[in-house]
Image 1 (tube, rainbow, N blue to C red):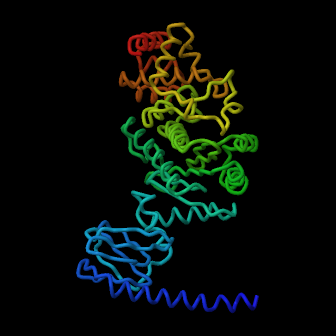
Image 2 (image 1 turned 135 degrees about the vertical axis):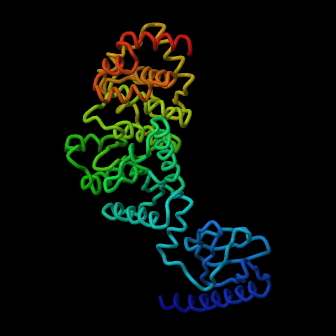
Image 3 (image 1 turned 90 degrees about the vertical axis):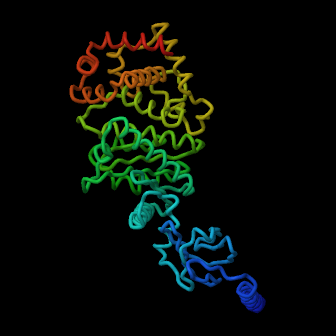
Amino acid sequence: MIGSRLVARPVAVFAVAALAVVARLVVLVVPPLVVSLVTIEACRADILYLKDGTRVGGQILSQSERLVRVRTSDGKVRTFRVEDVERADKGKDLAPDDDRAERDGPFMPGLDVATRKFVRDEARRFGRPMGLSLDAAARPNAWVFGDHSQSDLSQVAHAIQKTVTDFCDIFKCDVADALPSRSSDQPGAFYCFQFAQEPAYLKFMDKVFTRLRDDSVNDERLALMRRQKGFWIMTPRPLMARYRGAATLQSLTSNASHQASHALLLMYAPAGDWMPWWLLEGFATWQEIRLTGLNLTYCIDVAGAGDYVRDGTPKADELKKAKIADRWRRDVKRSVRDHDDKTFGALAKLSLNKTLLADVQQSWSVVEWLNSQELLVRFVLVYKRTGSIDGACRDALGSDPAAAHHKWSAWVRKTY
């Protein structure tokens, strides 16, 4: 140990001396850069103010007539164009939370500094009982926490936000109407927890979610959620949690869109325990395909009802088995031609565990048909108000379920 210390001391002194020489060379050799009448020089701590309002803290490494290179506090080197720089404060440092909020900017677009700081506080609050350091990314109505890279979490947040925006465009409503906040009349935000593997997901369930759940999640349902790959709930806040396993990032973003659609459809113009699974799955799948061009949620063919839990494992090659819209249209048309489709009354009675892929395809097609007739919004709202497929068809479509089914079938034969 003594020998190690004797060897280390000269090396450390030499390193400091070398750095001092390099620092002198930078000051002497590199010409000064003038930005807004401020000369930027290499120094140990600087704050770069950009014209878009963001700040960059770190150490200015070099400057030329066109570019400025800065080593930020996380060790990364970033390059900026001179024309994008407003000014620089040399020899000053951003406070750690300000620095973190500024670096989060590209992964939390649309959020001000105070909100970005709050998202970070939430990440620490949820990660602490798990003994994990959770990263975070966000959009105004989608806050995502997890152990993925911040770039991956940002893509999940983007997918959820797109779904929120699309839903509000479809229903011509304000975000606050579809995604209310618990504390004000301002729009709320989905909380999404995304983990790489099952152990972290289970730790979240046991250390965090058990404290968040309300009476809508009893012990039996909690046990089921632990066995699944993920879940979504609406109370006490819109929340989803999943683990990735062997799934692709594209599968994660597609499934996040699908789950967000479920919650939005139920939260907008709430109707108690109204939860027709055929419409929930049909609408969410329609939105998923509408936004991504793929369906990566119901993409696994199974032998019987209830087999998704067994066959839809994380190791399934979901992307390879995905069904694009054209493929689904061919399947639905074949089903109608062979009279293998269900009546609307039969669809309305399906529980989630009794729903097969063919049922989801038909439900998706019915939603596509309603939208093409500009009747989707009216149908959903009347369905919620009356609570029955008969009332929805009669009041919104002007016909009973049998006649409505006949109109849809004729449209499929003609359009598909």
